[in-house]
Image 1 (tube, rainbow, N blue to C red):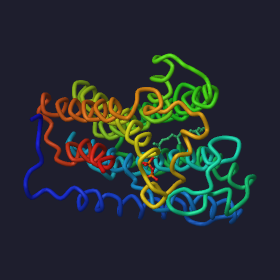
Image 2 (cartoon, rainbow, N blue to C red):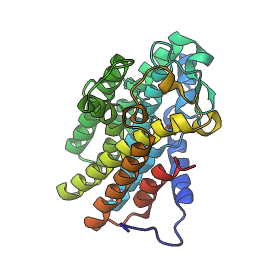
Image 3 (cartoon, helix red, strand yellow):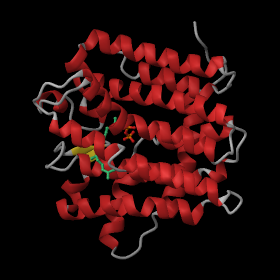
Image 4 (tube, helix red, strand yellow):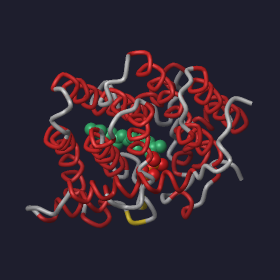
Length: 302
Ligand code: GRG
Protein backbone atom coordinates (compact mmCIF):
# COMPACT_ATOMS: atom_id res chain seq x y z
CA UNK A 1 0.00 0.00 0.00
CA UNK A 2 1.61 3.27 -1.10
CA UNK A 3 -0.64 6.01 0.16
CA UNK A 4 -4.32 6.27 0.90
CA UNK A 5 -6.81 9.09 1.11
CA UNK A 6 -8.11 10.46 4.41
CA UNK A 7 -11.54 8.91 5.13
CA UNK A 8 -13.47 12.19 4.96
CA UNK A 9 -11.82 13.44 1.76
CA UNK A 10 -14.22 13.91 -1.17
CA UNK A 11 -12.18 14.16 -4.39
CA UNK A 12 -15.02 15.20 -6.66
CA UNK A 13 -16.07 17.96 -4.24
CA UNK A 14 -12.51 19.29 -4.03
CA UNK A 15 -12.06 19.20 -7.81
CA UNK A 16 -15.49 20.74 -8.42
CA UNK A 17 -14.63 23.73 -6.23
CA UNK A 18 -11.46 24.48 -8.22
CA UNK A 19 -13.21 23.79 -11.49
CA UNK A 20 -15.85 26.42 -10.72
CA UNK A 21 -13.15 28.95 -9.98
CA UNK A 22 -11.35 28.14 -13.23
CA UNK A 23 -14.60 28.39 -15.20
CA UNK A 24 -15.34 31.77 -13.63
CA UNK A 25 -11.92 33.10 -14.68
CA UNK A 26 -12.05 31.51 -18.15
CA UNK A 27 -15.42 33.18 -18.66
CA UNK A 28 -13.93 36.51 -17.63
CA UNK A 29 -10.76 36.24 -19.73
CA UNK A 30 -12.76 35.10 -22.76
CA UNK A 31 -15.43 37.81 -22.62
CA UNK A 32 -17.02 38.38 -26.03
CA UNK A 33 -15.19 40.89 -28.19
CA UNK A 34 -14.98 41.57 -31.93
CA UNK A 35 -14.87 39.76 -34.29
CA UNK A 36 -17.67 38.13 -32.33
CA UNK A 37 -17.68 34.85 -34.25
CA UNK A 38 -14.06 34.13 -33.31
CA UNK A 39 -14.65 34.77 -29.59
CA UNK A 40 -17.83 32.69 -29.71
CA UNK A 41 -15.94 29.83 -31.29
CA UNK A 42 -13.09 30.16 -28.74
CA UNK A 43 -15.62 30.14 -25.90
CA UNK A 44 -17.57 27.23 -27.40
CA UNK A 45 -14.71 24.82 -26.76
CA UNK A 46 -12.77 26.48 -23.95
CA UNK A 47 -15.88 26.82 -21.77
CA UNK A 48 -17.57 23.54 -22.70
CA UNK A 49 -17.79 20.74 -20.18
CA UNK A 50 -14.18 19.57 -19.83
CA UNK A 51 -12.75 18.33 -16.56
CA UNK A 52 -10.27 21.26 -16.23
CA UNK A 53 -7.87 18.71 -14.77
CA UNK A 54 -4.68 20.44 -15.87
CA UNK A 55 -5.80 23.74 -14.32
CA UNK A 56 -6.89 22.04 -11.09
CA UNK A 57 -3.45 20.42 -10.87
CA UNK A 58 -1.75 23.80 -11.27
CA UNK A 59 -3.78 25.25 -8.39
CA UNK A 60 -3.09 22.27 -6.15
CA UNK A 61 0.61 22.39 -6.96
CA UNK A 62 0.63 25.98 -5.71
CA UNK A 63 -1.24 25.00 -2.55
CA UNK A 64 1.18 22.23 -1.63
CA UNK A 65 4.01 24.74 -2.09
CA UNK A 66 2.31 27.15 0.31
CA UNK A 67 1.57 29.58 -2.54
CA UNK A 68 -1.39 31.83 -3.23
CA UNK A 69 -3.63 30.40 -5.95
CA UNK A 70 -4.37 33.96 -7.15
CA UNK A 71 -0.84 33.96 -8.59
CA UNK A 72 -1.56 30.84 -10.63
CA UNK A 73 -5.10 31.41 -11.93
CA UNK A 74 -4.07 33.13 -15.15
CA UNK A 75 -1.45 30.46 -16.01
CA UNK A 76 -3.96 27.71 -15.15
CA UNK A 77 -6.56 29.29 -17.48
CA UNK A 78 -3.94 29.80 -20.20
CA UNK A 79 -3.13 26.10 -19.97
CA UNK A 80 -6.82 25.24 -20.43
CA UNK A 81 -6.89 27.57 -23.47
CA UNK A 82 -3.91 25.74 -24.96
CA UNK A 83 -5.61 22.42 -24.23
CA UNK A 84 -8.86 23.67 -25.84
CA UNK A 85 -6.91 24.81 -28.89
CA UNK A 86 -5.31 21.38 -29.23
CA UNK A 87 -8.75 19.73 -29.03
CA UNK A 88 -10.23 22.04 -31.70
CA UNK A 89 -7.36 21.36 -34.10
CA UNK A 90 -7.20 17.66 -33.22
CA UNK A 91 -10.85 17.23 -34.27
CA UNK A 92 -10.36 18.82 -37.71
CA UNK A 93 -10.76 16.57 -40.77
CA UNK A 94 -7.05 16.97 -41.60
CA UNK A 95 -6.11 15.63 -38.14
CA UNK A 96 -8.18 13.12 -36.14
CA UNK A 97 -11.44 14.06 -37.86
CA UNK A 98 -13.94 13.74 -35.03
CA UNK A 99 -17.48 15.13 -35.11
CA UNK A 100 -17.88 15.12 -31.32
CA UNK A 101 -15.98 16.61 -28.42
CA UNK A 102 -17.05 16.98 -24.82
CA UNK A 103 -20.41 15.48 -25.71
CA UNK A 104 -21.22 18.15 -28.30
CA UNK A 105 -20.52 18.65 -32.02
CA UNK A 106 -16.86 19.54 -32.55
CA UNK A 107 -15.94 23.18 -33.05
CA UNK A 108 -15.61 22.92 -36.85
CA UNK A 109 -19.00 21.17 -37.08
CA UNK A 110 -20.62 24.25 -35.55
CA UNK A 111 -18.48 27.12 -36.88
CA UNK A 112 -16.93 25.62 -40.03
CA UNK A 113 -13.30 24.69 -40.59
CA UNK A 114 -11.92 28.16 -41.29
CA UNK A 115 -13.33 29.66 -38.08
CA UNK A 116 -12.30 26.60 -36.05
CA UNK A 117 -8.69 26.92 -37.28
CA UNK A 118 -8.70 30.64 -36.48
CA UNK A 119 -10.31 30.13 -33.06
CA UNK A 120 -7.56 27.63 -32.23
CA UNK A 121 -4.87 30.03 -33.43
CA UNK A 122 -6.49 32.81 -31.42
CA UNK A 123 -6.58 30.76 -28.22
CA UNK A 124 -2.93 29.86 -28.68
CA UNK A 125 -1.80 33.46 -29.16
CA UNK A 126 -4.12 34.89 -26.52
CA UNK A 127 -3.16 32.43 -23.76
CA UNK A 128 0.34 33.86 -23.04
CA UNK A 129 -1.17 37.35 -23.14
CA UNK A 130 -3.55 36.24 -20.38
CA UNK A 131 -0.56 35.20 -18.27
CA UNK A 132 1.31 38.46 -18.92
CA UNK A 133 -1.65 40.75 -18.26
CA UNK A 134 -3.23 38.98 -15.30
CA UNK A 135 -0.47 37.52 -13.15
CA UNK A 136 -0.31 39.71 -10.02
CA UNK A 137 2.56 42.23 -9.81
CA UNK A 138 3.74 40.48 -6.63
CA UNK A 139 5.15 37.73 -8.87
CA UNK A 140 8.68 38.64 -9.96
CA UNK A 141 9.30 39.29 -13.66
CA UNK A 142 12.01 36.59 -13.61
CA UNK A 143 9.49 33.96 -12.54
CA UNK A 144 6.88 35.26 -14.98
CA UNK A 145 9.43 35.05 -17.79
CA UNK A 146 10.35 31.48 -16.84
CA UNK A 147 6.70 30.38 -16.73
CA UNK A 148 6.07 31.96 -20.13
CA UNK A 149 9.14 30.30 -21.61
CA UNK A 150 8.00 26.91 -20.31
CA UNK A 151 4.44 27.51 -21.55
CA UNK A 152 5.68 28.33 -25.07
CA UNK A 153 8.01 25.31 -25.00
CA UNK A 154 5.07 23.01 -24.17
CA UNK A 155 2.89 24.61 -26.88
CA UNK A 156 5.48 24.42 -29.64
CA UNK A 157 7.54 22.01 -31.74
CA UNK A 158 9.41 20.73 -28.68
CA UNK A 159 6.08 20.05 -27.01
CA UNK A 160 2.56 19.23 -28.15
CA UNK A 161 3.13 20.12 -31.84
CA UNK A 162 6.11 17.76 -32.00
CA UNK A 163 4.11 14.95 -30.36
CA UNK A 164 1.11 15.43 -32.63
CA UNK A 165 3.32 15.60 -35.74
CA UNK A 166 4.96 12.25 -34.99
CA UNK A 167 1.60 10.78 -34.00
CA UNK A 168 0.10 11.68 -37.37
CA UNK A 169 3.18 10.66 -39.36
CA UNK A 170 3.21 7.26 -37.70
CA UNK A 171 -0.41 6.36 -38.51
CA UNK A 172 -0.54 2.93 -40.17
CA UNK A 173 3.21 2.55 -39.67
CA UNK A 174 5.26 0.41 -37.32
CA UNK A 175 7.25 2.54 -34.91
CA UNK A 176 9.73 1.64 -32.18
CA UNK A 177 9.02 2.00 -28.47
CA UNK A 178 11.17 5.16 -28.15
CA UNK A 179 9.17 6.90 -30.88
CA UNK A 180 5.92 5.87 -29.24
CA UNK A 181 7.19 7.18 -25.90
CA UNK A 182 8.07 10.48 -27.55
CA UNK A 183 4.50 10.84 -28.85
CA UNK A 184 2.90 10.26 -25.43
CA UNK A 185 5.31 12.49 -23.54
CA UNK A 186 5.03 15.37 -26.01
CA UNK A 187 1.40 15.37 -27.06
CA UNK A 188 -0.04 14.74 -23.59
CA UNK A 189 2.53 14.43 -20.81
CA UNK A 190 4.14 17.83 -21.07
CA UNK A 191 0.89 19.71 -20.38
CA UNK A 192 0.48 17.86 -17.08
CA UNK A 193 4.11 18.45 -16.17
CA UNK A 194 3.74 22.14 -16.97
CA UNK A 195 0.63 22.35 -14.77
CA UNK A 196 2.64 21.13 -11.79
CA UNK A 197 5.66 23.29 -12.60
CA UNK A 198 3.62 26.46 -13.12
CA UNK A 199 1.97 26.06 -9.71
CA UNK A 200 5.32 25.47 -8.03
CA UNK A 201 7.25 28.19 -9.89
CA UNK A 202 4.60 30.85 -9.26
CA UNK A 203 4.72 29.90 -5.56
CA UNK A 204 8.50 30.29 -5.42
CA UNK A 205 8.93 26.64 -4.45
CA UNK A 206 12.48 25.45 -3.75
CA UNK A 207 14.15 23.38 -6.51
CA UNK A 208 13.66 20.09 -4.67
CA UNK A 209 9.88 20.54 -4.45
CA UNK A 210 9.74 21.69 -8.06
CA UNK A 211 11.50 18.47 -9.09
CA UNK A 212 9.13 16.28 -7.06
CA UNK A 213 6.04 17.94 -8.50
CA UNK A 214 7.44 17.84 -12.06
CA UNK A 215 8.11 14.15 -11.58
CA UNK A 216 4.56 13.54 -10.35
CA UNK A 217 3.23 15.50 -13.37
CA UNK A 218 5.28 13.39 -15.79
CA UNK A 219 3.95 10.15 -14.32
CA UNK A 220 0.29 11.11 -14.30
CA UNK A 221 0.55 12.76 -17.73
CA UNK A 222 1.83 9.51 -19.20
CA UNK A 223 -0.77 7.54 -17.23
CA UNK A 224 -3.50 9.85 -18.52
CA UNK A 225 -2.71 8.99 -22.15
CA UNK A 226 -2.71 5.26 -21.38
CA UNK A 227 -6.13 5.67 -19.74
CA UNK A 228 -7.39 7.64 -22.75
CA UNK A 229 -6.22 4.85 -25.06
CA UNK A 230 -7.89 2.18 -22.90
CA UNK A 231 -11.13 4.17 -22.94
CA UNK A 232 -10.94 4.49 -26.72
CA UNK A 233 -11.48 0.74 -26.93
CA UNK A 234 -13.66 0.31 -23.83
CA UNK A 235 -15.71 3.53 -23.53
CA UNK A 236 -18.98 4.80 -25.01
CA UNK A 237 -19.77 8.13 -26.73
CA UNK A 238 -21.53 9.26 -23.53
CA UNK A 239 -18.56 8.36 -21.32
CA UNK A 240 -15.93 9.79 -23.67
CA UNK A 241 -17.77 12.79 -25.09
CA UNK A 242 -16.14 11.87 -28.44
CA UNK A 243 -16.41 9.00 -30.89
CA UNK A 244 -15.10 5.76 -29.35
CA UNK A 245 -12.88 3.32 -31.30
CA UNK A 246 -11.65 6.03 -33.68
CA UNK A 247 -7.95 5.73 -32.87
CA UNK A 248 -7.95 2.02 -33.61
CA UNK A 249 -9.89 2.46 -36.86
CA UNK A 250 -7.62 5.21 -38.16
CA UNK A 251 -4.51 3.06 -37.71
CA UNK A 252 -3.15 5.17 -34.86
CA UNK A 253 -0.52 3.76 -32.56
CA UNK A 254 -2.21 3.62 -29.18
CA UNK A 255 -0.95 2.10 -25.95
CA UNK A 256 -3.46 -0.70 -26.39
CA UNK A 257 -2.52 -1.44 -30.00
CA UNK A 258 1.17 -1.25 -29.08
CA UNK A 259 1.22 -3.26 -25.85
CA UNK A 260 -2.20 -4.93 -25.54
CA UNK A 261 -4.98 -4.26 -23.04
CA UNK A 262 -3.58 -6.27 -20.15
CA UNK A 263 -0.17 -4.61 -20.13
CA UNK A 264 -1.85 -1.22 -20.64
CA UNK A 265 -3.89 -1.69 -17.47
CA UNK A 266 -0.85 -2.94 -15.55
CA UNK A 267 1.41 -0.08 -16.69
CA UNK A 268 -1.32 2.42 -15.86
CA UNK A 269 -1.65 1.02 -12.33
CA UNK A 270 2.14 1.03 -11.88
CA UNK A 271 2.45 4.64 -13.00
CA UNK A 272 -0.31 5.78 -10.63
CA UNK A 273 1.39 3.89 -7.80
CA UNK A 274 4.73 5.50 -8.55
CA UNK A 275 3.11 8.96 -8.75
CA UNK A 276 1.66 8.40 -5.27
CA UNK A 277 5.02 7.07 -4.02
CA UNK A 278 6.80 10.18 -5.28
CA UNK A 279 4.49 12.30 -3.12
CA UNK A 280 4.80 10.07 -0.08
CA UNK A 281 8.60 9.78 -0.24
CA UNK A 282 8.95 13.53 -0.36
CA UNK A 283 6.47 14.11 2.47
CA UNK A 284 4.12 16.16 0.29
CA UNK A 285 0.67 15.88 1.76
CA UNK A 286 -2.00 16.36 -0.88
CA UNK A 287 -5.11 14.16 -0.82
CA UNK A 288 -6.12 15.83 -4.09
CA UNK A 289 -2.93 14.79 -5.91
CA UNK A 290 -3.12 11.27 -4.45
CA UNK A 291 -6.80 11.15 -5.42
CA UNK A 292 -6.19 12.27 -9.01
CA UNK A 293 -3.57 9.55 -9.50
CA UNK A 294 -6.20 7.02 -8.36
CA UNK A 295 -8.97 8.61 -10.43
CA UNK A 296 -6.96 8.19 -13.66
CA UNK A 297 -6.86 4.43 -13.05
CA UNK A 298 -10.44 4.12 -11.80
CA UNK A 299 -11.95 5.85 -14.80
CA UNK A 300 -10.82 2.92 -16.96
CA UNK A 301 -12.25 0.26 -14.61
CA UNK A 302 -15.32 -1.55 -15.91
C1 GRG B 1 -0.69 23.44 -29.56
C2 GRG B 1 -0.02 24.63 -31.66
C3 GRG B 1 -0.64 23.47 -31.01
C4 GRG B 1 -1.13 22.47 -31.79
C5 GRG B 1 -1.88 21.33 -31.27
C6 GRG B 1 -3.77 19.05 -32.44
C7 GRG B 1 -2.54 19.05 -31.62
C8 GRG B 1 -1.48 20.06 -31.93
C9 GRG B 1 -2.35 18.18 -30.59
C10 GRG B 1 -3.34 17.18 -30.15
C11 GRG B 1 -3.02 16.77 -28.77
C12 GRG B 1 -4.09 15.92 -28.14
C13 GRG B 1 -5.52 16.18 -28.47
C14 GRG B 1 -3.72 14.98 -27.26
C15 GRG B 1 -4.68 14.12 -26.51
C16 GRG B 1 -4.68 14.55 -25.07
C17 GRG B 1 -5.90 14.06 -24.34
C18 GRG B 1 -5.82 12.74 -23.69
C19 GRG B 1 -7.00 14.83 -24.29
C20 GRG B 1 -8.20 14.59 -23.47
O1 GRG B 1 -8.06 15.33 -22.27
P1 GRG B 1 -9.18 15.41 -21.17
O2 GRG B 1 -9.80 14.05 -20.95
O3 GRG B 1 -10.27 16.31 -21.86
O4 GRG B 1 -8.63 16.07 -19.97
P2 GRG B 1 -11.31 17.33 -21.19
O5 GRG B 1 -12.40 17.43 -22.23
O6 GRG B 1 -11.82 16.75 -19.90
O7 GRG B 1 -10.60 18.62 -20.99
